[in-house]
Image (tube, rainbow, N blue to C red; front, side, top):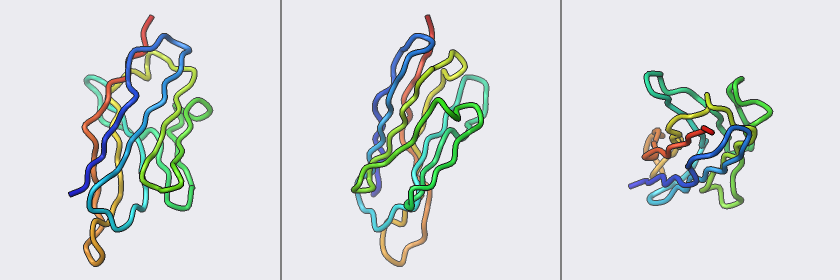
Length: 121
C-alpha cells in the first residue's frame, strides 16, 4: 500500500509564502515522478508543477517564477515552495506520484488527501 501525506497548507496574506511537503511511504519499488495539482471551488483540478526522477521539472504558466518544486535526496519527498502568493492561488493542493509499487507490477498514479491553501487579507 502506498501513501502520500501532505503538509504545509494554511492561510497566508497576498504576497506571502508557504511551503508544502509530500512524503511517499509504503510498498514502493520505484518513483518516476511526483508533483502537485490544485483544485479551486467550481474549477477543474489543474497541474501546478511536477518533478521527474532525473530532476526535470514542469510548471504551469500561472506559477512560473513564483513556485519552485524540489525533492529530497532519498527521492521520497517532494516540496513546493510558493512565493508571491495571490488570491487566485487559493485552492486545495493535491500531491501526485507516478509509482511502481512492486517489481513487475505496472506503474500507477497515487494521490494525497489534499491540503488547503488560502490566500487572503
